[in-house]
Amino acid sequence: MPQAPMDIRGALSVRSDPAQPLVTHIGPDGRMELSGASVANAAAKIANALASHFDLQAGDSVGVHIPWHWQRVTWLIGIWSAGCTVVPSGGEECDLIVAGPQEAAGLPGTVQVVSMHPFGMPLDAAAMAQLPQGIEDVTLAVRAQPDQQVFVADHSKELALDGLTQAELLAKGRTWAGRYPGITRLGMVPGPDQWWLPAIWPLVSDGAVVLAEDIDDERRTAEQIEAVAD
Image 1 (cartoon, rainbow, N blue to C red):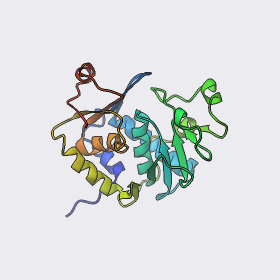
Image 2: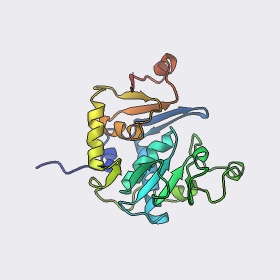
Image 3: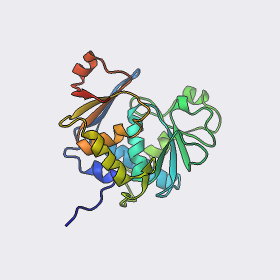
C-alpha cells in the first residue's frame, strides 16, 4: 500500500526522538535550545491561535516578518500546521501579519508582534511603548491555547510557500538535504533563500539546526556542528 501523503505537521510528529534538539538559536540575548517536543507544542499553540483566536482557515495567508530566531521555526511550522500559507514579507494582501518588534514599524493594519525574548516572554510595557499604535503582542493569545492541536487535518495539498504545497516543500527539503548526507547537526546563518530551511531541514533529516548570525570555528566546535549550510 502506498504511503499516504505527509504534511509538515505529520513530518514533525514522526521524528525518531522528540526529546532530542530540533533548533538552537544563539543571539545577543543568549542561547536557546528547543527539542522536537517543545517545537511541536509551540507550533500547536500557534496553529490553535490562528484558528480560534484569529479565525483563520486552511488556505489563508500569513505575512511573516520574523528575524533569524527560533521563533521563526515555531511560527512557520505553526502556520503550516493550521494549513495556512507563509508569505515572506507579506503585507495588505495577507489575512494576518506577524513580525518581530524591530520589523513591525511601517507594516499595514493590525500587526501581531512576536517576542524575540530568548524564552519567548511577552514584551514588557517599555518595549510596547516603543511600538507604533495598533500593534499587538501575540504572545498571550498563543500561550492561552492548548499545547495539542485541536483542529487536525491533512494539509499536504495546501499551499505552503512560494506556490509550493506542503508535500512539495517537504520534497524540496529532502532534495536540498541531499547536500549534507549523514549530517545530524547543521549550522545555518541568515540568507535570502533560507526562509524555509530552518523549519524544514530538521523534519526531513531528523537532525537539529543551529541558528546564529555567524558561525566561526570556536562556535562550531562548542555546538558540535558537523557542517555549515552554504
